[in-house]
Image (cartoon, rainbow, N blue to C red):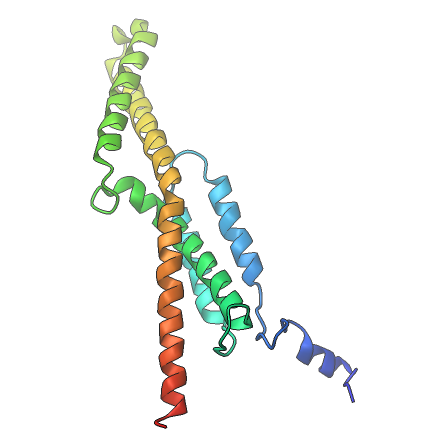
Amino acid sequence: MDDVSPQGARKTVGKGGNSAPPQPGVIGIAFAAVLTAALAQGSWQWFATYIGVTLLALIFCFYRLPALMPGFRSAYLLNLLAYSVVVGLCIAITLAPMLQRWAWLFPMPGTRSECRELGKYESVRVEAALADLAGRDRTALAYAQELQSHDAVSECLAATTTMWLPVYGFGAAVLVGLGTWLVNRARVRREAGPD
């Protein structure tokens, strides 16, 4: 007989179909990651890394895959797919500021030099626009040039980084999915013991 008491209702809340374990807020975490990516205007800032790490911590602490089951339509594989894609997205958001700033992590040599040239152009443009300031306050002019040049380079690198983020996210998703599947498979074999 079904337990219709509040305690019984609480026991069944959050359980997915096909004997999936409770998944508190995993879809919300995915939406938060997408929202972070959508709201990142211009240069990727370090707060994106903080958000990505926070979302990864939530996933690793609260998300549990169902038991490993064979079959391509099993709850395990469907959950593993969703888990891998969300973790890949969070990793991409975490890495975005680093990809933009660190050449060793994301070389893009042609793009980096083109962005620097764009920065030089913006500096010259500011000097032309503020030519009357040059005779009065050279420090203010130099500051305006440096600021505009920095912004132009950051916007250029951010645009390129954003184009490549899906590749990094997909790569991370594949690695996470494959690694998780291999670890779970090894655990099931170890628990089954020798035949």
